[in-house]
Image (cartoon, rainbow, N blue to C red):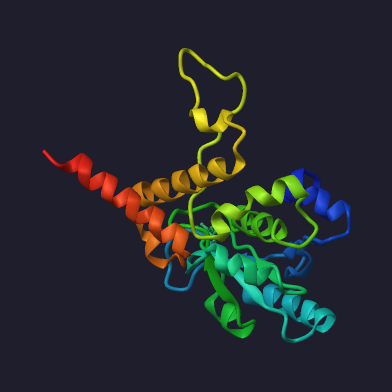
Length: 239
Ligand code: 4GY
């Protein structure tokens, strides 16, 4: 599964350039008995299987011997704390971390306690396994590492970093089925274009995600633009 991040796109290139490593470990290596078992039936009954504690504890112990006792372990599950860009940026400053991917009904709680796993969620929906969530985290973290994004890519990435949604984008042709693009984008006036984009960005955030604006640290220019937008809206609402 992990070839998606290891071989393709921004993350694939970062790995090829030696800026980051992603090692995938098959827990089966630490499985029990001839069948290399890593799951068993749940105490208390019910459907599905639960991942055994011992293979996970042994695997994490091996990694702690290699990378040090302090290496963070993150378990991806819907019960975890919601991941946000802020956390992603913090993770990108760590030298190493372990992502534990669950399957079936999840992991024996004692394993999570013993390995002192942090529990993180990528959103309020249920996946069949932790791997896709882990890849979401990896992708988001890797693109924050210095040198991973090229100059062109990184400018664009500013959007969420400032707590605002991205502005609209247009490319050629200039007209599609009678729909043109805002004149300012053709003006060649880069200061006006930047102002227009910022206003776009703020008004979209105000319309679609007002919750983001409550936490965003806006500078004076941004605050002024937000007031402008709110006033314009009040005028529109007048009967
Ligand atoms: N949502 N955020 C998520 C998830 C799958 C059974 C425990 C999520 O992070 N992970 O849905 N994970 C389950 C599958 C074991 C993880």
